Length: 368
Image (tube, rainbow, N blue to C red; front, side, top):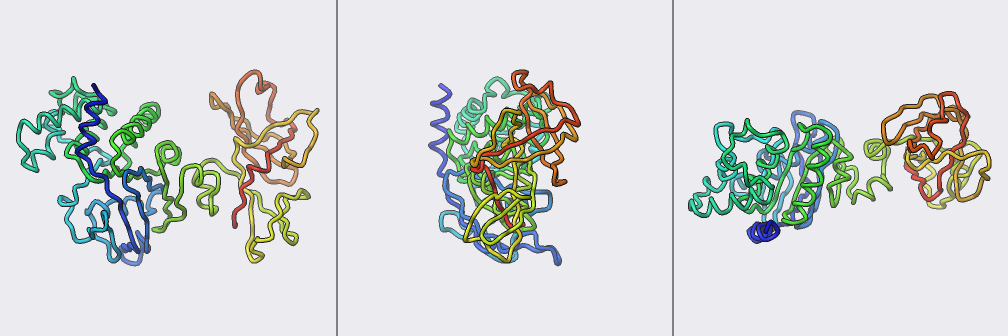
């Protein structure tokens, strides 16, 4: 029955591609957006990810029509939208604070966009009930907003955003007010709902794990520019700059020395690449979960990179632990460890000498 309801909702949605070209927005001498160009596919879930002040919300609000860029183009399916007011863009919006009306019931909040569009009452009733079923709130139609939990309010805001069949759905950090467990639950629910409805979705967050969990593609934004655009795996496994590598996931950086076409850390050759730009400095990015502790019987082999050091800090974090290891060369590496008793975690102590290895296939090299 719920699938039939979702299919009805999906029939009302015509997803559009978004084409952004050379978008610029300044506040005084500060560039909030600096000649940003971005193509978003119809039906795609794209996340704008970046730190506070990076320009991600400015870009989202430009797509929505709530701010006007100084120059550039925004097209929905080849139709220029720069001068089109927000209410004529047929865009659904979920705000960070939900922006629900406290004096209205859940039903009235969800039906508000339809009422604005002067839809017949019987159509409003049908569409609101379909939306309530879709977000699993059928029994909450008559409740007031202050009678709802944070997660329920988020669902109401989401239902209100898609009830009128928007061509594009925009979300500005809608989960930031929720506790960690509920937030992670809602991430999966939003991902599943997007898959079912298929509406083009642009999502803003500063939470890299949230972006990796939910997105088809991620645009990493910094200082008004897109640093990198790619799938979650591409962004995580192949960052193209130290900013992206540092912002996405936990990372340690080791400066490398160049000898001809070879890059070395200490005396160990890390990589040979004839295409290396000899005018740049290079570093190795190490993800803590890609390192392994090896025992005394381990024999070094050419498929791995090896490190020796001492545990300077060991932090238990439940299902995993984080060890900070000071290498013989004086650098520090973070190592993510399993806390299973079978992995001898209980035998590790601060001050222990340890050997680490990492598969060469996991090496990430970036300009530094």
